[in-house]
Image (cartoon, rainbow, N blue to C red; front, top):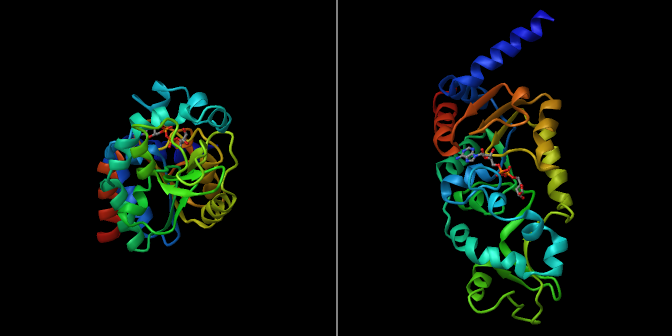
Length: 269
Ligand code: APR
């Protein structure tokens, strides 16, 4: 009994003070060779893309059942595109922030092998991250469900000013769907299998900016911990897996991750 409460106390101490959490996280990453990051909307918040559930989050303004289920999309594609007409420009104009670039630095230094993301904004790839696993697909492309034609999202976004819902430029069909995984849709099998494999082989799992309430993405860090990985959580509010973590840093990804990466890469933790 005594041993476990002592390690809980040790973990709790690290959790509260971000300064020491940054050193601890850098230590763990400095000796990682199969590190994996799992990211959520929080890493893109500082790029101007609202999150889903935090203050001002998308689902505090819109009903996800109406806007993001495949069932409702097939019944009324405009229910998705009307929201996209408003939100789309900010997402399409967004640039990677220091949090995204810090993960690139960790990958270039051989500390991270992959970034598994729930985000569909493409900002990890835009920052230069390789081997990005997009669990929820990509919002950068749109596919016609009638003829299979694919288009860049930016092109379709321009048509929303005069066409709602937007039509396929080849067949005229009205089911132009972003290549994201909507609620009720099957997950991209290959991406899930690859994410689980990377998590099972990881020596360090770094979770950034996710409320970890959506499955199967939220299971990925648990697969890593079950297979012996150390867990680091960087989030500006508590998450359901904080108790499993060696290090929990309560802070903004764009401020915390550059410090962690700098120490891990340049100071060996
Ligand atoms: N730095 C760190 N964490 C942040 C920041 C920030 N700058 N800003 C917000 N956060 C935290 C929030 O406190 C919240 O816990 O990021 C988390 C974002 O959680 P969600 O909005 O729930 O986003 P996410 O976990 O990615 O959602 C999962 O749900 O709606 C679906 O498909 C959608 O991929 C999405 C999935």
